[in-house]
Length: 232
Image 1 (cartoon, rainbow, N blue to C red):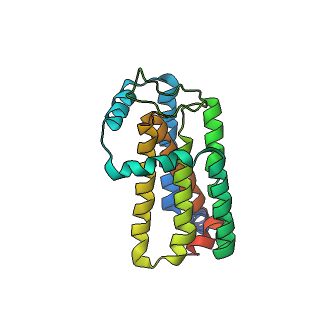
Image 2 (image 1 turned 135 degrees about the horizontal axis):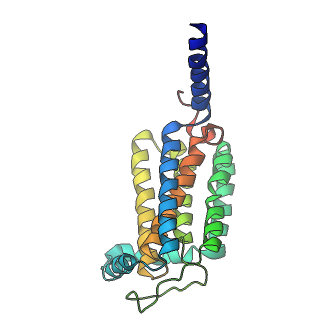
């Protein structure tokens, strides 16, 4: 009987330690999103040009986006060194107004490392005017994944976690997350509208940001300063 109880006791201890270290639902989200990244990456490596990508992009470019189109230049502008300046400003603001969140801000910013690694490992040609309706931006780097989308998804999530979670009343936080999601979607559409990326580039970017950010927030040592040490 003692021998039978021992494994159960050890299992319960490991389970308790795991709960004390990570938020399991977010870790599960991170794993699923990472698997999605792996699948999309494999498809892109085997098929750099995907006809369905071109069809979707032409449909996006043929759509009148109305007032939403006014935001597209902002997403184009925020790339390159200007994005780094924005990151520094946000980090300084976090140190001033919500210092316990500094670990999460730094860890979340590592999504940029994933972009650098993947964009150097996977060289994918960008859309051309022979394939889509228009190309108003044609950066020299690989098309895969969308760095702008990763940056915007990371920035908006950090802003919501580090400022929204602290300063918004509870009833307004869901609305804050809706704004985060809408901003990321607008950015994704803008990258297709300009012809800078393929839809699968943007999809991979969203999955990369989701996987890494969910993982970062799942680690309690990193995120407890923002979310608090909730019930375990």
